[in-house]
Length: 510
Image 1 (cartoon, rainbow, N blue to C red):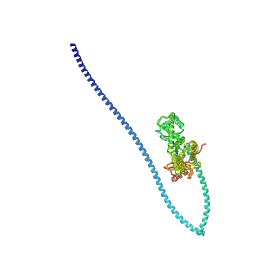
Image 2: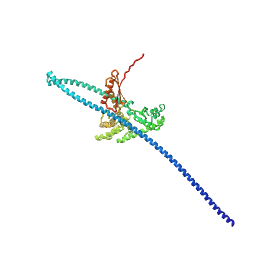
Image 3: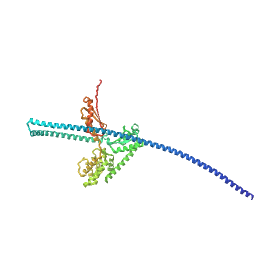
Image 4: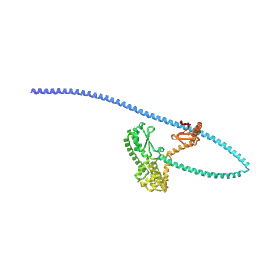
């Protein structure tokens, strides 16, 4: 019994001691945990503060960079503005000079008119005196003298009329010869590289001039691969941050342009990459041609057109004629043709169809010989268009005789679309004609040996014979030539007249 009581007391004492020991240990762990938590919180605060400072520094750096970029843009804009102001000031000075010259001419003309009136009055007075003297000397009245004079004038008029007829015949021959030369120059404009740069080149901008070296490649490897693959001439000259693509075929030139822009954007330029980008450009352009053809057919409201014709029609998107887009021109002609056909009571759909297809030959006229009207008629016939449509295409430039009212409508609509204001711009043909006129004026002066219009017509260089023209006469020729150019020609800006007199003495020692 005593043993049980002692055991019970010992157990109670052990439980009490264990409870206090556990409580003491728990309190120590809690204090250590709280201390550890405080340390972690402090460390986290320090790290957060460091990250905050780092982000703040990065934000300041980024803001500084953005500020520098914006300042550069603003500086460039200010430079462009200064250049524009300089050009405007230069043009204003030119206008002021021309205004002064015009005022001087007006004053000179006014003085000349006064002198002419005085001379005219004096001549009338002398004529009356001479008439009175002649009547006294000849012993004839005014009526008799008039009859004699009329007979003589009649004989002279017959002689002059015969002479005038000969002159008209010679002038007609000259006009015919000039027309033949015009046809030849037009053919040259279409097919000669040096004379069609206005419509056969594309300019591709570059990020910097270093890219030109990468385009050329080691020993010209890249440029040769590009030209061989695309069939387009790649011209790398002194043009800053740009290269030029030259080709008669506008579709091929567009493919080359897209491929080159992709290569420049990629930065990796080598033959394999050129082939890859050209294949991609080929798919892009073919898809654009298809979409353009389908859109044109939809805009014109035409149904049932051959798929091959739609594709060829879409290629006209990249073809221009006198600065006018041929595809847009064809859509306009289709609309004009439909309007006139409805007014005249003939088939509107057929008129629109013929109008849309009238210039289809221009899509392949660089590949096939002959006028585009003839080429287009053959193509339309091959793709099973009706005889009326084929004949209208063939006759719209009067290559053959017009036989139906549809032929006349297409010709008239074509003329309206091309002749409306702002449809077409001045072309290379008129530019060459202006240069020829400039050289022709210089050749009229006595002592001129050769003359050349250079700098796109902004300078005329005249070589004179040194034995026939001295230094004073050279200055006079330059002054008179400048005055004559101002009177007879219309031109933008100003033209520099440069008269060169050079004397050379050559001997040979034998």
